[in-house]
Structures are given as C-alpha cells and as structure tokens.
Length: 101
Image 1 (cartoon, rainbow, N blue to C red):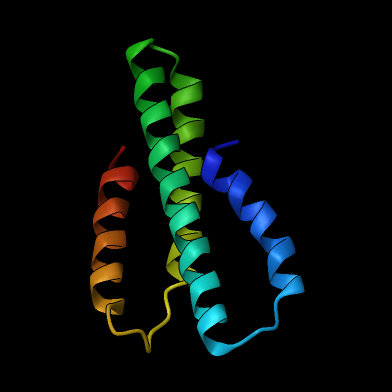
Image 2: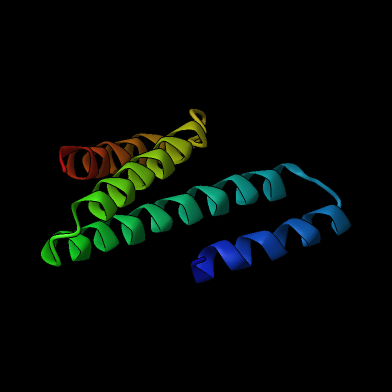
C-alpha cells in the first residue's frame, strides 16, 4: 500500500466529521484523482522492475493494475473544472504509456 493510499483512507474519516461544502467536495475528488494517478505511476514502475527481472507474469499484473487505476482517475475528472482539459490530456498521455506496455 502506498503512502498516498494510506493517507487517502484516513482522510475519508475526516470528511465524515467535517461538513460537506462544494470546495471540500472538489478537493476530495482532486485528492482521490491524485492518489489513483500516483498509484498508477507506482504500479507502472513496479511493472518495469519486474520486466527487468524477467518476471513476465508480475509485469502483466502490475501494468494491468496501473491501467485500472488510471481508468479510476479518468472517472474522477470534473468536466466543469477550469483545468479539466489539462488533466484529461495528462491522463491520456499516461494511458498511452501504461497501456502501451
């Protein structure tokens, strides 16, 4: 479990305590998006390390998990956000890299 995932689990408890406002909801979505994106990068590099060690089954598993995390991130992009186009473009680039493996 990555540090980002660990923090993400504990922030869910804080969200139940603090009242929900629009800013808080947007922040929560952005934080979850970043957690999934960083987990995707971590899993992708674990797949590359497995490839160097010629552990092909692990490589496939890590790369598929990276693509799954990236898909979760794409679902969290808010279309009304000011920088949604830049986020979507970054996620598409990451999908080209991770999906290409």
